[in-house]
Length: 159
Image (cartoon, rainbow, N blue to C red; front, side, top):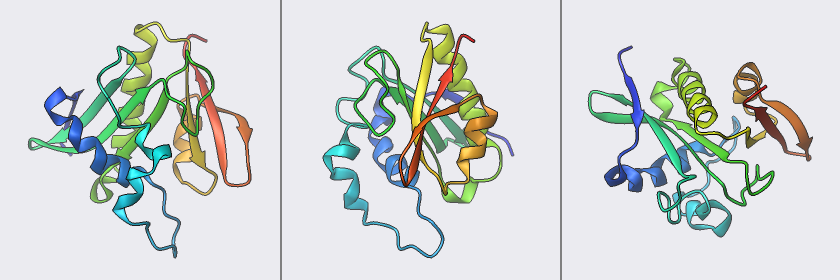
């Protein structure tokens, strides 16, 4: 499939709302939460003021001028927060484009961008049942903590 990966334009930042909702892992047999869930304070940390900090970075996968996937990082107090020097990941691929390697490519490109930008590590939180756990491990993320539902993972970028 033909698509390109590029930096998200500031005028496109409002689309992160759609991608944040699509990033929510919904296990088989579970009803998806309402879209209004992204208005919860713990979800808004991924969106509010995005682009205002030099630490805010976003890459998108584009097919035929449409954004079909996004990966963004920022230093925020989210589920995967490690410290105030470590950017946390959010990644989302539209459902009809999942399983095609787009998420892996976005992840790799963002890890490279963070590395050349001077960050020493990046973090994320992922539900244990999420199929993406394997993708993160293949990309060099290691589990550093966990609770009943999710793993906290870190990628040491300069190792």
